[in-house]
Length: 488
Image (cartoon, rainbow, N blue to C red; front, side):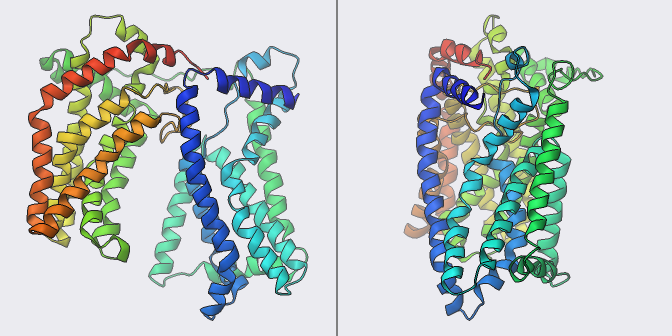
Protein backbone atom coordinates (compact mmCIF):
# COMPACT_ATOMS: atom_id res chain seq x y z
CA UNK A 1 0.00 0.00 0.00
CA UNK A 2 2.88 2.36 0.75
CA UNK A 3 4.13 1.83 -2.81
CA UNK A 4 0.78 3.07 -4.18
CA UNK A 5 0.93 6.11 -1.92
CA UNK A 6 4.41 6.93 -3.22
CA UNK A 7 3.15 6.67 -6.82
CA UNK A 8 0.29 9.04 -6.02
CA UNK A 9 2.70 11.56 -4.48
CA UNK A 10 4.94 11.40 -7.55
CA UNK A 11 2.02 11.91 -9.95
CA UNK A 12 0.77 14.82 -7.84
CA UNK A 13 4.18 16.45 -8.11
CA UNK A 14 4.50 15.95 -11.88
CA UNK A 15 0.95 17.02 -12.74
CA UNK A 16 0.89 20.13 -10.58
CA UNK A 17 0.55 23.41 -12.46
CA UNK A 18 3.50 24.71 -10.46
CA UNK A 19 5.73 21.80 -11.48
CA UNK A 20 8.20 24.10 -13.25
CA UNK A 21 8.60 26.43 -10.29
CA UNK A 22 8.78 23.48 -7.88
CA UNK A 23 11.51 21.88 -9.99
CA UNK A 24 13.52 25.10 -10.09
CA UNK A 25 13.01 25.48 -6.34
CA UNK A 26 14.20 21.95 -5.65
CA UNK A 27 17.33 22.46 -7.77
CA UNK A 28 18.22 25.67 -5.93
CA UNK A 29 17.34 24.21 -2.54
CA UNK A 30 19.42 21.15 -3.46
CA UNK A 31 22.44 23.41 -3.93
CA UNK A 32 21.89 25.03 -0.53
CA UNK A 33 21.32 21.62 1.02
CA UNK A 34 24.62 20.40 -0.45
CA UNK A 35 26.41 23.38 1.09
CA UNK A 36 24.85 22.72 4.50
CA UNK A 37 25.78 19.04 4.25
CA UNK A 38 29.38 19.94 3.42
CA UNK A 39 29.52 22.25 6.44
CA UNK A 40 28.15 19.56 8.76
CA UNK A 41 30.52 17.02 7.23
CA UNK A 42 33.50 19.32 7.75
CA UNK A 43 32.49 19.83 11.39
CA UNK A 44 32.12 16.09 11.88
CA UNK A 45 35.53 15.36 10.38
CA UNK A 46 37.63 18.21 11.80
CA UNK A 47 35.87 19.28 15.03
CA UNK A 48 37.60 16.59 17.11
CA UNK A 49 41.07 17.88 16.17
CA UNK A 50 40.04 21.51 16.53
CA UNK A 51 38.74 20.94 20.06
CA UNK A 52 41.86 19.05 21.06
CA UNK A 53 44.04 21.89 19.74
CA UNK A 54 42.00 24.23 21.96
CA UNK A 55 42.68 21.97 24.98
CA UNK A 56 39.04 20.85 25.10
CA UNK A 57 37.73 17.35 25.60
CA UNK A 58 35.77 16.68 22.38
CA UNK A 59 33.00 14.42 23.69
CA UNK A 60 32.43 16.42 26.88
CA UNK A 61 32.40 19.68 24.93
CA UNK A 62 29.78 18.37 22.49
CA UNK A 63 27.68 17.02 25.35
CA UNK A 64 27.86 20.36 27.16
CA UNK A 65 26.10 22.28 24.38
CA UNK A 66 23.96 19.43 23.04
CA UNK A 67 20.88 20.65 24.93
CA UNK A 68 20.93 23.93 22.99
CA UNK A 69 21.65 22.07 19.76
CA UNK A 70 18.47 20.02 20.27
CA UNK A 71 16.29 22.99 21.26
CA UNK A 72 17.53 25.20 18.40
CA UNK A 73 16.94 22.32 15.99
CA UNK A 74 13.32 22.17 17.16
CA UNK A 75 12.82 25.91 16.64
CA UNK A 76 14.42 25.86 13.19
CA UNK A 77 12.19 22.97 12.17
CA UNK A 78 9.11 25.02 13.00
CA UNK A 79 10.20 27.79 10.66
CA UNK A 80 11.64 25.74 7.81
CA UNK A 81 10.56 22.10 7.86
CA UNK A 82 7.63 21.50 5.54
CA UNK A 83 5.00 19.16 6.91
CA UNK A 84 4.09 16.45 4.38
CA UNK A 85 0.58 16.73 3.02
CA UNK A 86 -1.55 13.75 2.03
CA UNK A 87 -4.83 14.37 0.24
CA UNK A 88 -6.85 12.08 2.50
CA UNK A 89 -10.44 12.87 1.46
CA UNK A 90 -10.51 10.39 -1.47
CA UNK A 91 -8.51 7.85 0.54
CA UNK A 92 -11.15 7.72 3.28
CA UNK A 93 -13.69 6.49 0.73
CA UNK A 94 -11.47 3.54 -0.23
CA UNK A 95 -10.88 0.27 1.67
CA UNK A 96 -7.64 1.53 3.22
CA UNK A 97 -6.98 1.37 6.93
CA UNK A 98 -6.76 4.72 8.62
CA UNK A 99 -3.69 3.54 10.48
CA UNK A 100 -1.95 2.91 7.15
CA UNK A 101 -2.66 6.46 5.98
CA UNK A 102 -1.35 7.96 9.22
CA UNK A 103 1.74 5.74 9.30
CA UNK A 104 2.55 6.78 5.73
CA UNK A 105 2.10 10.50 6.45
CA UNK A 106 4.27 10.32 9.57
CA UNK A 107 6.78 8.09 7.83
CA UNK A 108 7.32 10.72 5.15
CA UNK A 109 8.80 12.99 7.79
CA UNK A 110 11.45 10.40 8.71
CA UNK A 111 13.35 11.00 5.46
CA UNK A 112 13.27 14.76 5.81
CA UNK A 113 16.46 16.68 5.11
CA UNK A 114 16.21 18.11 8.63
CA UNK A 115 16.77 14.61 9.99
CA UNK A 116 19.38 13.42 7.52
CA UNK A 117 21.68 16.46 7.71
CA UNK A 118 22.58 15.73 11.35
CA UNK A 119 24.09 12.40 10.29
CA UNK A 120 26.83 14.23 8.38
CA UNK A 121 28.12 15.59 11.69
CA UNK A 122 27.41 12.80 14.16
CA UNK A 123 28.41 9.81 12.00
CA UNK A 124 31.98 10.98 11.27
CA UNK A 125 32.31 12.35 14.82
CA UNK A 126 31.24 8.98 16.27
CA UNK A 127 33.57 7.17 13.89
CA UNK A 128 36.42 9.34 15.15
CA UNK A 129 35.45 8.50 18.73
CA UNK A 130 35.67 4.81 17.90
CA UNK A 131 39.03 5.35 16.20
CA UNK A 132 40.34 7.13 19.30
CA UNK A 133 39.37 4.16 21.47
CA UNK A 134 36.14 5.38 23.09
CA UNK A 135 34.71 1.90 22.66
CA UNK A 136 31.26 0.53 21.85
CA UNK A 137 29.60 2.98 24.24
CA UNK A 138 30.19 5.66 21.59
CA UNK A 139 27.71 3.77 19.40
CA UNK A 140 25.16 3.78 22.23
CA UNK A 141 25.68 7.54 22.64
CA UNK A 142 25.14 7.98 18.91
CA UNK A 143 21.88 5.98 19.00
CA UNK A 144 20.64 8.23 21.80
CA UNK A 145 21.39 11.33 19.72
CA UNK A 146 19.56 9.89 16.69
CA UNK A 147 16.55 9.19 18.89
CA UNK A 148 16.56 12.80 20.16
CA UNK A 149 16.66 14.14 16.60
CA UNK A 150 13.69 12.02 15.58
CA UNK A 151 11.89 13.03 18.76
CA UNK A 152 12.23 16.62 17.55
CA UNK A 153 10.83 15.53 14.19
CA UNK A 154 7.60 14.18 15.67
CA UNK A 155 7.33 16.91 18.29
CA UNK A 156 7.37 19.33 15.36
CA UNK A 157 4.22 17.64 14.07
CA UNK A 158 2.48 18.79 17.25
CA UNK A 159 4.14 22.20 17.16
CA UNK A 160 2.78 22.87 13.66
CA UNK A 161 -0.74 22.23 14.93
CA UNK A 162 -0.38 23.82 18.36
CA UNK A 163 1.45 27.15 18.21
CA UNK A 164 1.28 27.50 21.98
CA UNK A 165 3.80 24.64 22.22
CA UNK A 166 6.18 26.44 19.88
CA UNK A 167 5.94 29.74 21.73
CA UNK A 168 6.56 27.89 24.98
CA UNK A 169 9.70 26.19 23.64
CA UNK A 170 10.97 29.45 22.10
CA UNK A 171 10.38 31.38 25.33
CA UNK A 172 12.16 28.73 27.39
CA UNK A 173 15.09 28.64 24.95
CA UNK A 174 15.55 32.42 24.94
CA UNK A 175 15.22 32.50 28.71
CA UNK A 176 17.81 29.76 29.24
CA UNK A 177 20.28 31.43 26.87
CA UNK A 178 19.80 34.77 28.64
CA UNK A 179 20.22 33.22 32.09
CA UNK A 180 23.43 31.50 31.03
CA UNK A 181 24.76 34.62 29.28
CA UNK A 182 24.33 36.66 32.47
CA UNK A 183 25.68 33.83 34.67
CA UNK A 184 22.40 33.42 36.57
CA UNK A 185 21.69 29.79 35.76
CA UNK A 186 23.70 27.35 33.65
CA UNK A 187 21.51 24.55 32.32
CA UNK A 188 24.49 22.81 30.74
CA UNK A 189 25.77 21.82 34.19
CA UNK A 190 22.82 19.45 34.52
CA UNK A 191 22.23 18.51 30.86
CA UNK A 192 25.86 17.52 30.40
CA UNK A 193 25.47 14.86 33.06
CA UNK A 194 22.62 13.25 31.12
CA UNK A 195 24.32 13.36 27.71
CA UNK A 196 27.58 12.20 29.18
CA UNK A 197 25.64 9.43 30.91
CA UNK A 198 24.48 8.15 27.52
CA UNK A 199 28.15 7.31 26.94
CA UNK A 200 29.36 6.28 30.38
CA UNK A 201 26.40 3.98 31.13
CA UNK A 202 24.93 1.10 29.16
CA UNK A 203 21.30 2.03 29.75
CA UNK A 204 20.76 5.82 29.70
CA UNK A 205 20.69 5.93 25.88
CA UNK A 206 17.39 4.04 26.11
CA UNK A 207 15.65 7.15 27.53
CA UNK A 208 15.69 9.07 24.18
CA UNK A 209 14.52 5.88 22.41
CA UNK A 210 11.57 5.62 24.77
CA UNK A 211 10.89 9.32 24.17
CA UNK A 212 10.79 8.99 20.36
CA UNK A 213 8.53 5.93 20.67
CA UNK A 214 6.12 7.82 22.94
CA UNK A 215 6.09 10.93 20.74
CA UNK A 216 5.40 8.83 17.65
CA UNK A 217 2.67 6.92 19.50
CA UNK A 218 0.89 10.07 20.62
CA UNK A 219 1.32 11.67 17.17
CA UNK A 220 -0.17 8.59 15.55
CA UNK A 221 -3.17 8.52 17.90
CA UNK A 222 -3.65 12.28 17.61
CA UNK A 223 -3.99 12.19 13.82
CA UNK A 224 -5.76 8.87 13.62
CA UNK A 225 -8.49 10.08 15.97
CA UNK A 226 -9.02 13.12 13.72
CA UNK A 227 -8.83 11.28 10.42
CA UNK A 228 -12.51 11.41 9.52
CA UNK A 229 -14.76 13.63 7.50
CA UNK A 230 -16.87 14.71 10.47
CA UNK A 231 -14.03 15.82 12.74
CA UNK A 232 -10.52 16.20 11.34
CA UNK A 233 -11.62 17.51 7.95
CA UNK A 234 -14.59 19.55 9.09
CA UNK A 235 -14.20 23.29 8.88
CA UNK A 236 -14.22 25.04 12.22
CA UNK A 237 -16.99 27.46 12.96
CA UNK A 238 -16.69 30.52 15.13
CA UNK A 239 -18.78 33.46 16.16
CA UNK A 240 -18.84 36.02 13.37
CA UNK A 241 -17.86 39.56 14.29
CA UNK A 242 -18.71 42.57 12.17
CA UNK A 243 -16.09 45.26 11.72
CA UNK A 244 -17.07 47.99 9.30
CA UNK A 245 -14.04 50.29 9.31
CA UNK A 246 -16.40 52.92 7.93
CA UNK A 247 -13.70 55.61 8.06
CA UNK A 248 -12.03 53.90 5.09
CA UNK A 249 -15.11 54.38 2.87
CA UNK A 250 -13.90 57.86 1.97
CA UNK A 251 -11.16 56.25 -0.14
CA UNK A 252 -13.63 54.43 -2.42
CA UNK A 253 -12.54 51.11 -3.91
CA UNK A 254 -9.08 51.54 -2.40
CA UNK A 255 -10.70 51.70 1.03
CA UNK A 256 -12.68 48.51 0.34
CA UNK A 257 -9.49 46.59 -0.42
CA UNK A 258 -7.78 48.03 2.64
CA UNK A 259 -10.69 46.94 4.85
CA UNK A 260 -10.43 43.39 3.51
CA UNK A 261 -6.68 43.29 4.19
CA UNK A 262 -7.08 44.67 7.72
CA UNK A 263 -9.70 42.02 8.47
CA UNK A 264 -7.37 39.39 7.05
CA UNK A 265 -4.54 40.52 9.33
CA UNK A 266 -6.78 40.53 12.39
CA UNK A 267 -8.70 37.31 11.87
CA UNK A 268 -6.36 34.78 10.30
CA UNK A 269 -3.45 33.03 11.95
CA UNK A 270 -1.18 32.91 8.90
CA UNK A 271 -1.59 36.59 8.14
CA UNK A 272 -1.32 37.58 11.82
CA UNK A 273 2.01 35.78 11.89
CA UNK A 274 3.35 38.38 9.43
CA UNK A 275 2.74 41.02 12.10
CA UNK A 276 4.63 38.93 14.65
CA UNK A 277 7.49 38.43 12.23
CA UNK A 278 7.55 42.17 11.51
CA UNK A 279 8.06 42.80 15.21
CA UNK A 280 10.89 40.25 15.31
CA UNK A 281 12.56 41.92 12.33
CA UNK A 282 12.67 45.20 14.26
CA UNK A 283 15.06 43.64 16.78
CA UNK A 284 17.13 42.00 14.03
CA UNK A 285 19.27 45.12 13.82
CA UNK A 286 20.66 44.49 17.31
CA UNK A 287 22.94 41.87 15.79
CA UNK A 288 24.50 44.54 13.57
CA UNK A 289 24.44 47.79 15.54
CA UNK A 290 25.70 46.47 18.89
CA UNK A 291 29.04 45.44 17.32
CA UNK A 292 28.69 42.08 19.07
CA UNK A 293 29.48 40.16 15.86
CA UNK A 294 32.70 41.29 14.19
CA UNK A 295 31.72 40.13 10.67
CA UNK A 296 28.60 42.37 10.82
CA UNK A 297 30.51 45.47 11.85
CA UNK A 298 30.90 47.03 8.40
CA UNK A 299 28.99 49.61 6.33
CA UNK A 300 27.22 47.28 3.87
CA UNK A 301 25.89 44.96 6.57
CA UNK A 302 24.51 47.88 8.57
CA UNK A 303 22.43 49.15 5.68
CA UNK A 304 21.34 45.55 5.11
CA UNK A 305 20.03 45.59 8.68
CA UNK A 306 18.38 48.98 8.15
CA UNK A 307 16.39 47.66 5.21
CA UNK A 308 15.30 44.57 7.16
CA UNK A 309 14.36 46.44 10.36
CA UNK A 310 11.96 48.77 8.56
CA UNK A 311 10.81 46.29 5.89
CA UNK A 312 9.73 43.32 7.98
CA UNK A 313 6.03 43.65 7.11
CA UNK A 314 6.79 44.53 3.51
CA UNK A 315 8.77 41.32 2.99
CA UNK A 316 6.62 38.91 5.00
CA UNK A 317 3.22 40.13 3.77
CA UNK A 318 4.11 41.59 0.39
CA UNK A 319 5.85 38.50 -0.96
CA UNK A 320 2.50 36.65 -0.98
CA UNK A 321 0.50 39.24 -2.90
CA UNK A 322 -1.84 38.21 -4.53
CA UNK A 323 -1.69 34.70 -2.99
CA UNK A 324 -3.46 36.01 0.12
CA UNK A 325 -6.56 36.41 -2.06
CA UNK A 326 -6.22 33.07 -3.85
CA UNK A 327 -9.38 31.63 -2.24
CA UNK A 328 -11.61 34.17 -4.02
CA UNK A 329 -9.28 35.39 -6.77
CA UNK A 330 -11.49 33.94 -9.52
CA UNK A 331 -14.53 35.76 -8.16
CA UNK A 332 -12.56 38.99 -7.81
CA UNK A 333 -11.37 38.79 -11.42
CA UNK A 334 -14.95 38.37 -12.64
CA UNK A 335 -15.93 41.71 -11.07
CA UNK A 336 -15.45 45.19 -12.46
CA UNK A 337 -12.24 45.74 -10.50
CA UNK A 338 -9.28 47.67 -11.82
CA UNK A 339 -5.90 46.06 -11.24
CA UNK A 340 -4.50 49.51 -10.52
CA UNK A 341 -6.79 49.95 -7.51
CA UNK A 342 -5.95 46.47 -6.24
CA UNK A 343 -2.20 47.09 -6.54
CA UNK A 344 -2.47 50.52 -4.92
CA UNK A 345 -4.28 49.12 -1.89
CA UNK A 346 -1.52 46.55 -1.30
CA UNK A 347 1.14 49.21 -1.79
CA UNK A 348 -0.44 51.56 0.73
CA UNK A 349 -0.76 48.75 3.27
CA UNK A 350 2.97 47.96 2.92
CA UNK A 351 3.83 51.66 3.18
CA UNK A 352 1.84 51.97 6.40
CA UNK A 353 3.53 48.87 7.80
CA UNK A 354 6.97 50.23 6.89
CA UNK A 355 6.28 53.60 8.54
CA UNK A 356 5.01 51.95 11.73
CA UNK A 357 8.08 49.66 11.89
CA UNK A 358 10.37 52.66 11.45
CA UNK A 359 8.68 54.56 14.27
CA UNK A 360 8.82 51.53 16.58
CA UNK A 361 12.52 51.18 15.78
CA UNK A 362 13.26 54.65 17.16
CA UNK A 363 14.92 53.02 20.20
CA UNK A 364 17.96 52.55 17.93
CA UNK A 365 18.68 56.22 18.63
CA UNK A 366 20.41 54.83 21.70
CA UNK A 367 23.21 53.68 19.34
CA UNK A 368 23.50 57.13 17.77
CA UNK A 369 21.67 59.34 15.29
CA UNK A 370 23.54 57.87 12.32
CA UNK A 371 22.35 54.36 13.23
CA UNK A 372 18.71 55.44 13.24
CA UNK A 373 19.21 57.38 10.00
CA UNK A 374 20.36 54.11 8.39
CA UNK A 375 16.98 52.62 9.34
CA UNK A 376 15.12 55.69 8.08
CA UNK A 377 16.82 55.68 4.67
CA UNK A 378 16.23 51.91 4.54
CA UNK A 379 12.53 52.66 5.01
CA UNK A 380 12.64 55.26 2.22
CA UNK A 381 14.27 52.72 -0.08
CA UNK A 382 11.67 50.11 0.91
CA UNK A 383 8.80 52.46 0.10
CA UNK A 384 10.26 53.77 -3.14
CA UNK A 385 11.88 50.64 -4.60
CA UNK A 386 11.36 47.43 -2.65
CA UNK A 387 7.58 47.81 -2.44
CA UNK A 388 7.49 47.78 -6.25
CA UNK A 389 9.83 44.81 -6.49
CA UNK A 390 7.75 42.84 -3.98
CA UNK A 391 4.55 43.37 -5.97
CA UNK A 392 6.34 42.58 -9.21
CA UNK A 393 7.59 39.31 -7.75
CA UNK A 394 4.07 38.52 -6.53
CA UNK A 395 2.82 38.45 -10.12
CA UNK A 396 4.91 35.30 -10.67
CA UNK A 397 3.95 33.57 -7.40
CA UNK A 398 1.20 31.13 -8.32
CA UNK A 399 0.94 29.09 -5.14
CA UNK A 400 -2.43 29.44 -3.38
CA UNK A 401 -2.58 30.06 0.36
CA UNK A 402 -5.07 27.99 2.31
CA UNK A 403 -6.33 30.37 4.99
CA UNK A 404 -8.47 27.62 6.54
CA UNK A 405 -5.43 25.77 7.87
CA UNK A 406 -2.91 26.78 10.50
CA UNK A 407 -0.07 24.84 8.90
CA UNK A 408 2.95 26.72 7.61
CA UNK A 409 1.86 29.90 9.29
CA UNK A 410 5.15 31.53 8.37
CA UNK A 411 4.58 31.17 4.66
CA UNK A 412 4.46 28.67 1.86
CA UNK A 413 7.86 27.50 0.74
CA UNK A 414 6.56 26.70 -2.72
CA UNK A 415 5.81 30.35 -3.40
CA UNK A 416 9.14 30.72 -5.12
CA UNK A 417 10.60 30.52 -8.60
CA UNK A 418 13.58 31.77 -10.57
CA UNK A 419 11.87 35.01 -11.61
CA UNK A 420 11.01 35.95 -8.04
CA UNK A 421 14.55 35.11 -6.94
CA UNK A 422 16.08 37.36 -9.62
CA UNK A 423 13.64 40.15 -8.75
CA UNK A 424 14.53 39.77 -5.06
CA UNK A 425 18.28 40.27 -5.52
CA UNK A 426 18.14 44.10 -5.93
CA UNK A 427 16.15 44.45 -2.69
CA UNK A 428 19.32 44.06 -0.66
CA UNK A 429 22.21 44.38 -3.08
CA UNK A 430 21.29 47.83 -4.45
CA UNK A 431 21.04 49.70 -1.10
CA UNK A 432 24.15 47.91 0.19
CA UNK A 433 26.08 48.89 -2.94
CA UNK A 434 24.86 52.52 -2.90
CA UNK A 435 25.69 53.04 0.76
CA UNK A 436 29.11 51.41 0.46
CA UNK A 437 29.89 53.52 -2.62
CA UNK A 438 29.05 56.78 -0.88
CA UNK A 439 30.70 55.66 2.37
CA UNK A 440 34.11 54.98 0.88
CA UNK A 441 34.16 57.62 -1.88
CA UNK A 442 32.86 60.52 0.21
CA UNK A 443 31.43 59.99 3.71
CA UNK A 444 28.86 57.90 5.60
CA UNK A 445 26.28 60.68 5.25
CA UNK A 446 26.71 60.73 1.48
CA UNK A 447 26.10 56.98 1.49
CA UNK A 448 22.80 57.62 3.26
CA UNK A 449 21.91 60.26 0.69
CA UNK A 450 22.57 57.81 -2.15
CA UNK A 451 20.21 55.22 -0.66
CA UNK A 452 17.51 57.79 0.15
CA UNK A 453 17.81 59.31 -3.35
CA UNK A 454 17.17 55.91 -4.92
CA UNK A 455 14.04 55.54 -2.80
CA UNK A 456 12.80 59.04 -3.67
CA UNK A 457 13.48 58.40 -7.35
CA UNK A 458 11.48 55.16 -7.20
CA UNK A 459 8.61 57.00 -5.53
CA UNK A 460 8.69 59.74 -8.19
CA UNK A 461 8.22 57.13 -10.94
CA UNK A 462 5.54 55.28 -8.98
CA UNK A 463 2.80 55.78 -11.57
CA UNK A 464 4.98 54.49 -14.39
CA UNK A 465 6.05 51.47 -12.35
CA UNK A 466 2.45 50.72 -11.38
CA UNK A 467 1.46 50.76 -15.05
CA UNK A 468 4.16 48.21 -15.87
CA UNK A 469 3.21 45.99 -12.93
CA UNK A 470 -0.45 46.20 -13.95
CA UNK A 471 0.43 44.98 -17.45
CA UNK A 472 2.31 42.00 -16.02
CA UNK A 473 -0.60 41.11 -13.72
CA UNK A 474 -2.95 41.19 -16.70
CA UNK A 475 -0.58 39.01 -18.73
CA UNK A 476 -0.33 36.47 -15.90
CA UNK A 477 -4.04 36.65 -15.03
CA UNK A 478 -5.29 33.36 -16.47
CA UNK A 479 -2.19 31.40 -15.51
CA UNK A 480 -2.63 32.63 -11.94
CA UNK A 481 -6.33 31.67 -11.88
CA UNK A 482 -5.50 28.19 -13.18
CA UNK A 483 -2.77 27.73 -10.59
CA UNK A 484 -5.03 28.86 -7.75
CA UNK A 485 -7.49 26.12 -8.67
CA UNK A 486 -4.88 23.58 -7.63
CA UNK A 487 -5.78 22.24 -4.20
CA UNK A 488 -2.80 19.96 -3.63
